[in-house]
Image (tube, rainbow, N blue to C red; front, side, top):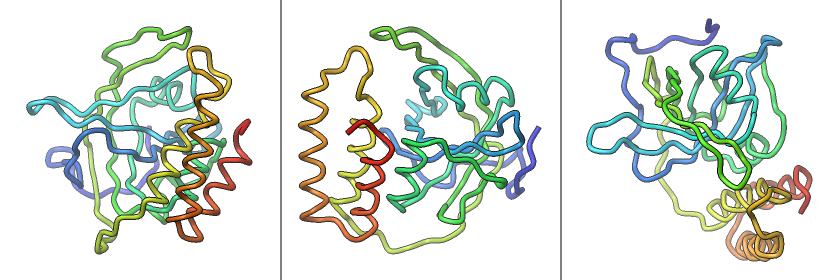
Amino acid sequence: MNDGPRSESDATAEWPVSLSGVTETIVTTLGPNGLWNLAALGVFADDENGPATARTWGNTRTRRNFHRQGEGYVQFVDDPVVFTDAALSITEREEPVLESASAWVRVAAEPIDSGSDDGTEWETWELRPLESAVESTTVPTIDRGFGAVIEATVAASRLGVDGYDETTLRDRLDYYASVVDRAGGPREREALERVREHSEW
């Protein structure tokens, strides 16, 4: 089912980082073409020792691959360009773990709930760690530009989707762009240009 790397055994695997709130990650899932598809995935922290969960929206490759394979690689990255490409474009690769991943965890993905919101179908998944690894550690820094890029990908992904006001989304995108201009570095500015390229903005 899976052609990826191995680290901790299934019996001892845990999340490689502490989760809180909604952690923005990149997930890679194996498609029927034998390539690993990249997508953004918000992971919801476990509630009182319950499982971590994530929600897919629409009939995405991630959703279909989760159903087909039952697993994927959740990865923690801090490169805004890599995140933007994963969030807003179709990106595939031969290996599941990204070079830019500071840590990763292979998870079993089990559907536990589904529904529809403003005409868009969603599905909630329980994510159970099977193996994980920390690839690198860095001294954390706070960059408002990076946060603005993440928020811009969310707003851009909702353009043209029923249930979201187009004017409000575009106003948000303009604001996030101003934050990147003031507080972002070269990678954040490049990522913002990718947002424009990959979306209807």
